[in-house]
Amino acid sequence: MQKPILILGACGQIGTELTYELRKKYGATRVIASDIREGNENLMDSGPFELLDATDYNALEEVVAYYEISEVYLMAAMLSATAEKFPMRAWNLNMNSLFNVLNLAKEKKIDKVFWPSSIAVFGPNTPTDNTPQNTIMEPNTVYGISKQSGERWCNYYHQKFGVDVRSLRYPGLISHKTMPGGGTTDYAVEIYHQALSKKAYTCFLNKDTKLPMMFMDDAIRATLLLMESDPKDIKIRSSYNLAAMSFSPEEIAKSIQTRIPDFKIDYKPDFRQEIADSWPNSIDDSQTRSDWGWKPEFDLERTTQEMLDNLGKKPN
Ligand code: AKB
Image (cartoon, rainbow, N blue to C red; front, side):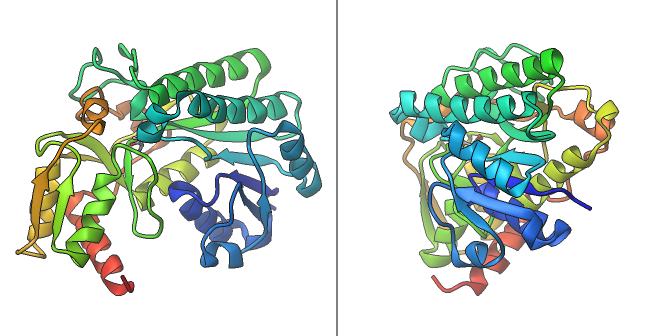
């Protein structure tokens, strides 16, 4: 039987869908959702929930002991755009929560950890097309620096203390169930909402800024696949490159126009343009595919169809 799982940051964009999927798979009572605030009604009604700050070690240790938690998914983080505004808060949240979870695993209080990294670990000196798994990184954003440091700590805890920590470098994630918050790739979700509500969108990135992206179902599937993989197949304990598609704002707009022909887009780049310019255009995830069998299912066309169909059913 699956031992209890704790999700930290369960009310965010990824945490919400991860909670639904894990509850579907393992049963609602075995998946404890937690966050510093309550989530949407569906999430709160779907199983146990704890108000919990992932940076508070004692509170975290108490919840882990109470539910006899075996696996932790640490989804709490401050993303790239917000982190530029609050560097110290971002560093404290992103690093202290990770140390807390890694230390619980080191002390054998939990068995397995998932921690998300990001394409933000790469920087302006990284090769931009088909960015390899191992390459120059040198991130120049607060968020990217925290993710790159986190990767090194994950690898360190695995090598020194045998901690079973697993990680993916998520691209920008697109979903219709929960909004993203504070990221540079958020435009790729906002655009679908505004295409339906206003038939127009002003994008905060330039029209030709190509970034790696993924539909949420693929991201959740990759996460569960990695967590269920045999430890002997997991050759990388810092974080795996993960890819599905890459597109620019102009390309996503064209894909929306195939279904909403009078949709209009214009461009007013802001401070997020500089962040996006420092990230890769596309990612080479061939090692991820060969080590544990990853393969994406959603391209841009299918993502547009899913987003517009599902958002179209919701009240504004
Ligand atoms: C962000 O834009 O900050 C995130 C990410 C790519 O990690 N979506």
